[in-house]
Image 1 (cartoon, rainbow, N blue to C red):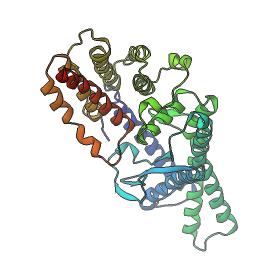
Image 2: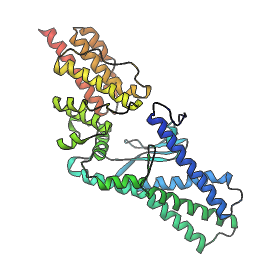
Image 3: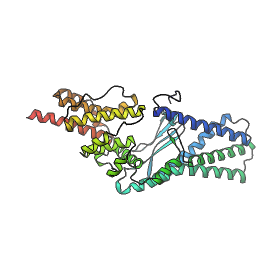
Image 4: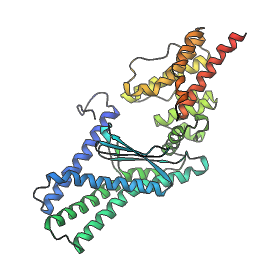
Length: 373
């Protein structure tokens, strides 16, 4: 987690996310302490944090179980310093959670395979059920704890007090998540459910989720789901626009892809939006060099934020290879392309990786054609 002043100029998503997590976590702990004092627990400090973690874990497990019952798969569970991963190939792995913004608890649930157009509405309903299950399980678990404490009270008074506290904490967490609110980058489950209920299956968020899953499953952009043309024209979400651009480019719909590129990076100058502008300029250079032939400048490389470099590496290599071919530097183009060809040997290759390697091969094919002639 990165710390800084609340009015930091770059307004980066990482900072606002960390701040919102701190606010949510702080409110949770303070609220739990107030409940403990109200019940009459004199020294709650040693057990208060474990109690809060147990309540949050119950909430996240509600999401996970609902996902499994909806034929989804649980990919990650984040809680405090730990991350539990269930790889698609099977097994389970526990390691350190280095994303401090997720220490407050999170679960990542994805479809077992990428949704197609005819089951996108089913995918949306399953996501609604998964988001709603967390608050539902929290409220049910809290009510059960309160009923048990009243009908079958523990023999020791401290046990009764802690059972009451856990019940009240769980109910409060569940009700708080039902309220459709947003704090920084943190959205409540109620907000997510309400958004999905209002939106149709072809709305940007659902389409983006489907494209992300397809990419992770190794489906090339040409086979990703696309919104209708009128829906593309109405898109404002930058990640969705970028994914749509790659889907259009891989379908050879170059004019439409260029139009989508023109809309990237037009924002308030935050760091993430600057990064999107870099992606836009990089892709413009590539399209001008390969598909338009109107003399593009050197692709932009300066001031790319570190956390975006891994995303841009393949695009940068693709663009540099195209520039070298256009300039007649065949040897340099082959050397540049070879720097990423090792990715073919990876056991799981994303759809975007396949796309980039295919485009690089397409660019180098012109070099081989020139050699033959």
